[in-house]
Image (cartoon, rainbow, N blue to C red; front, side, top):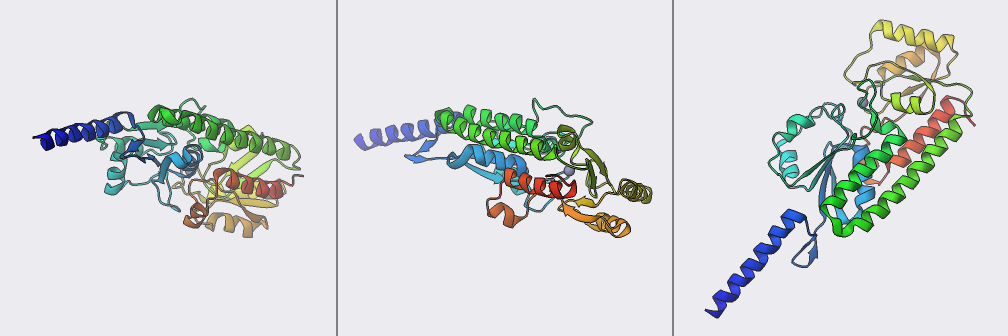
Length: 299
Ligand SMILES: [Zn+2]
């Protein structure tokens, strides 16, 4: 009898605990620390979530490295993972257009969905909001807010990491301003899809891209002729290209005009090696600044 009473107390105790865990995410189970499970759709939001969540979280990247996040098709195992996660982070509805449909299949009603574009200024439906440091600040805060709401006991930890990330964003923003105010030319000619609208707007540059907002859009022969003419007329020495897409267009333009090719990463996806090596959003944006500095002849 005693044994049964003890067992039922134990059962109530364990059941009570696990119930508390699933409701308020008290981050302990059987004395062991349980990390917040976070799923982020693509590299910039994945990197911010990792920076802010640190050791208190387990952040997974939904779209595999090297894949195109605009029109990703979620798999059955993605859905299972999301149903087991605490927080789902995505860039915004114009970027991951497939998220709305995917979330209809999510039965986990405890999950917090974070649309990081909340509070950012989106213009002309351009989904590439992470290419503006002002937006990065808002996106990072949205992610930190969700972590604090789910796991309030670690509020100070998340706030400290957010503060560190914001300091780095302030610094790189400032470095961009300083460097880009010294350039001999403002003309960025881009042989990929129109991803850098926010960046050029922020730093008052001029920008021509071979394609539209989506990587699917193919440039027409007329688009290419216009780009070639633009490069020749403005005496532009460099053409930028993006990762993931074919370099056929920039290569053709480069051959036609003599303009040299430089990588400008839109950060939609890094390679597996880059992700595994711990390369950050800020690191990649500094590499972009080095190439812009060469391309626009800045000090
Ligand atoms: Zn894009």
